[in-house]
Length: 281
Image 1: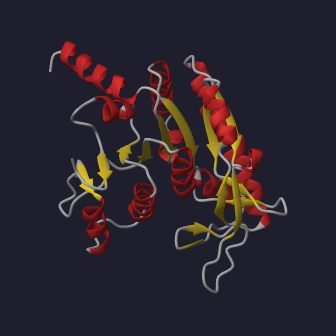
Image 2: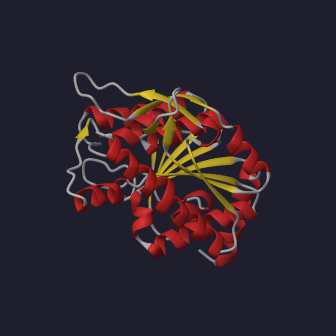
């Protein structure tokens, strides 16, 4: 396609999305590769310049596990949730709210953007209580009970890109480890965002032949889980996508974390990953 046609197509989407809020969840894949992180930072700045408001929620599970093993602690997971004792919680805060959050903010600044790093404890953004998982004590793992998004709205109104680490705070002030996919979905709903975007280590949702599915209805995606086609780490992302779609988010995107995949997904007809919506139009 000629460059001029690509630009005209992009202009159409810029007009359509101007003024909207997109919540984007970064998986660890974004932070591992500096080239990807820098390209994603450029994408976020591009969105800001065309009056789209990106909000970032990031994970960092791989780095947390690596640090635990370095210190002689074996990571333990129950139904995808990290069992978190007080020592592990200190590591979670150090890596998420400290190292990774600062690296993302620094990358955005390096490319000319304006970002502010906060955690879910800031202004009680993610108010939480200890999660329950049957007979297993998950420790300091939290379930979000309330999202107080005023701090995020204030940053957006001032032209900043919020970068949020998923750490919640309990009523007694205890820090709690929150699943980043869940935090992103809950925040997107509270902000009445127009899109929820998951950046992952895979191309998107795949069919039984391992081929990318470009567009899915919620019911079709649910059937993929039921039939065992969608599995492992894709299941929690789809479940959070269902939650978002059921609570006012019109479209959820699951895309590969590679250079400029955000722009390709949002501003081209072909897209680059999987778009999930309640009903295809």
